Amino acid sequence: MFERKSDIHPYLAEAGLGPFAEEIERLCVPALAFEPAGAGAAAVQLGGAPLMAASGAWPAHPGYRQGNALGDRFGGRGPGLARTFSGPTPLHFVASIELAAVKRTGVLGGLLPGAGRLLFFWDPLAGCYVETEESCRVVWDRADASSLARHDVPPALQAQMQGEYIPAVFPQKPLTPLAVWSMPDKWLLQDIGSADLRASLEDEDWEEIWDGFSDAMIDAGAWKLASGREVLPHRLGGWPIPEQGDPRYAAVAAARGALGLAGRMPDEAEKAACEAEMHRWTLLLQIDLNKLSDAFAEGTVYFVMREADLKAQNFDRVHAIYQQT
Image 1 (cartoon, rainbow, N blue to C red):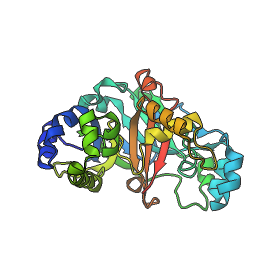
Image 2: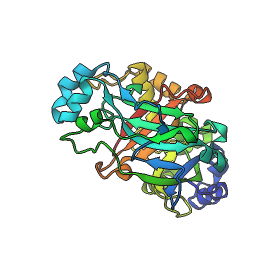
Image 3: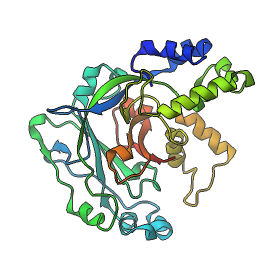
């Protein structure tokens, strides 16, 4: 991840990847990282009480389609988990992003609406088991600022979390956006790189260089830019920074029903179909859960969606994918 586009080519050249620097620079895309906000109104809010239309309803998930089967298998792991599988429950508020502030950065090429705010909600109990659109909601709240109000967490969600280690309300944290350049990881380069670049990834003469570069990128993770500047490990837009596989693949597999409740692995034809389709999906937001709340020891939730839906400004089919190392 790079603070400036001018950082990309020199960084890759210094790492010994000069022959591929120009191509990789072309594959890097704009994104937003985040830093703690100072005093005053913040462009981004994690946790706390969401500010949204006074008449807006707090999102809830319906009864999960496989709720009974999930409850039978995993419900004994916690009282709240059993309850969330069994019926409709309010979702946790995760983040709010003021779209006018995003527009002012000049980043993301107008992909997002220019006014209002995006509010992200998720089920942190069932979210690691349900990776379809059922376990999250992304609300595009277009209400005028004069008609906004703070919404307290619903009593049903407070009751839901009784006896659980996750609070009903995550700590409120104001953030400010920072424009960065996002680079595909090594495994994604195997899919989208040129023939020469892909061949180098499997060439013994390049193995040590690629391994060293990949290890350095993994060590930096979402925390540190190539310039050395440290940021919070959350991202809006850009390429996913996966803890496991590409979260877009997981979303496609869930949408296609390629992964069953019993953890059935997709066959080769299903894998190929998912790999092809995932390139029509994009990362909307990724949140490091440990930096959202110390209730989580680790893990990242990725909100991903179809590029066609993003172009249409339709946030009704966003999927939330949970990963941990």
